[in-house]
Length: 233
Image (cartoon, rainbow, N blue to C red; front, side):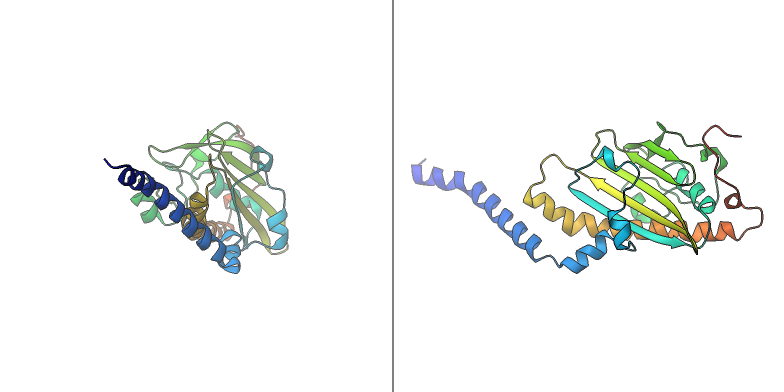
């Protein structure tokens, strides 16, 4: 093979890689900041965005972070039961089950409190798919705070319940890090993961809100009682 042809063949992948990097960089630079802010911080106030969340110290420098929130017209005790029973084979994720199941996650969101899943404890696992990863409970303050992390330490998911005048402020934060945050990976995060996660998490937060408000309106509901630590009768 002639030297010039060999050089041309060898340089083609490099040209493709360089072109891809340039496109990714240009797209990332042109990404509408207000829209991205809405995707990342849907429902969150300026105070919510900078608030210290349970478990933040477990992943202090994430490559991607979202903080989303909703106000629930119910006390924390009506919100908490829905959080601790989340997971595949448990209470589901209160989001679009059909999308979750297209991805093979085997999620079936319930509208009922499941007593067998109410005694979550630090160290317990939260399955996010039938054969998928299991998040480990790292922080648990009954009725107030909850945080899970992946086995590889690259994903942290935390919740905070704050009593407010009209009910409860439910805040959810995701922190994710990657091995090599390249330009292309960052572009994929911005163009796919961030808006996709908003679609699913917004549905989840509104789903928890609806269930908690319904529970609080039920006489002698679980939400009328204080959440109990794991192991309590």
